[in-house]
Image: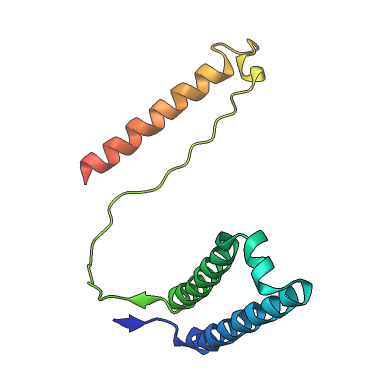
Length: 132
């Protein structure tokens, strides 16, 4: 495996920094809660799942940062060179399909003339490639 851009590995320092931040915030939160009431009272009124969600959230954020940094390094798992010869041309045909194209000022209508011109163009292009 090769890394396309190893510069982003410098951001790995964010992972331990975020981990320390979460540890600090968990301890700070616990201290603030203990100022509010005694531990045994808090356990009775508090839901354990909220603490569990806080830990799961921290793990998910840390792993998302880690995988994000890894993705930025553009890992490459081997490659295969293929040479191919491209045949053909790219053609874009733009046609106005507004109601003004249905005007009968010329015969047939403008839209019908555009259809015929496109058909003629396609037959010329097909004839060109059949000759090759």
